Length: 198
Image 1 (tube, rainbow, N blue to C red):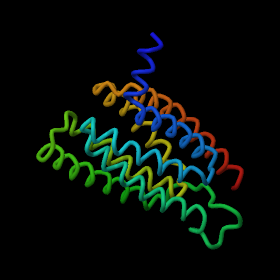
Image 2: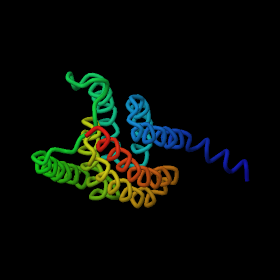
Image 3: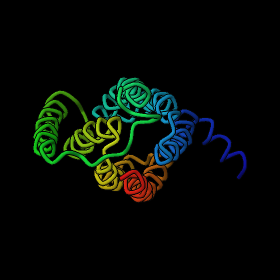
Image 4: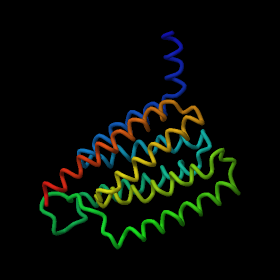
C-alpha cells in the first residue's frame, strides 16, 4: 500500500506541490499577507503544466495570467496607493464598477468559449470558459483588495470541483473543496477588517 501511495505521489508530484502551495496561497490571501503574491506566482507556474497535460486550456492560460497578475498585485499591495499609511486597505467594489466587471466577464466567457469549442479538444469548453472568465475578474479584484472578490471565488471554486472531478484531478479537487471553504472564511475575515478600518 505504501508503495502504491509513493508511486502515485511521484507520478503526480507537480500537481500535489501545486495543490499544497495553493493552500498556502489562500491562507496568506485571507491574512492579507504580501507573500500571497510570490507563492501565488509559483503555484500558477506549476499549474500551467498540470492544466496543459489535462487539456484544460483556458485554465492553463488563466495560470499564465495569474503569473502576471501576481506581479501586479505584489506591486499594488506595496506601492499602489500613495496616500496609504502602512498597507492597502480592504474596500467595497465601487457600484459603478460592477456593470463593467459583469460586461468584461461576459465578453471573456464568450471569447474563451468560442476559442475552446472551435480550436481545441477541451472536454468541457463552457465550464472551463466560465471559471476562467470569472477567475480573471476575481483575481484583478483581489489585487485591488475589493471585498466582493471572495463571493466570486466561492462560486468559481465550487464549480471547479465538479470540473476537476470529471478529469480525475483528485489533489486539485481536494484543493478546490478547501478553496471553497476558505473563500467563505476569507470573505468574513476581510469583512471584519473592512469594518474595523471604517
